[in-house]
Amino acid sequence: MRANFFLLSRATITASLLAVAVSMPGYAEPAPEVAEVMDSIVERMYDTLTIDELAQVNYEFVDEFITAQERAVLATKYWSF
Image (tube, rainbow, N blue to C red; front, side):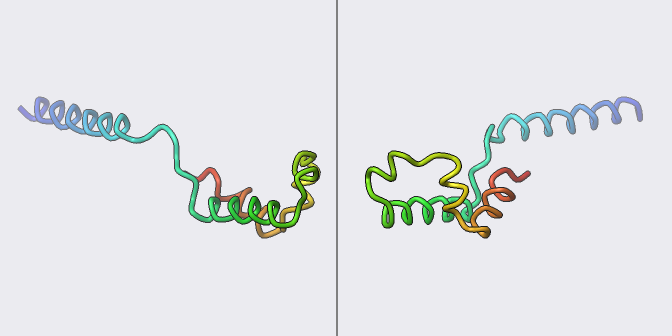
């Protein structure tokens, strides 16, 4: 009798965990801080750069354009578990 209860409990727990895992989305929404930082960077680019400068934006430019605080948020908050 006790063995059947253990198996039933184990099956219930396994089924519950599986149901939770299946219902979870496959991605995580970016933290609001990340969205705010991205919006701020893009808005600042549109406000300060010409169309020709925007067309020439590359990794090196963005690396120098963003602030240390923005870089820290993007480096630490984008993927969180």
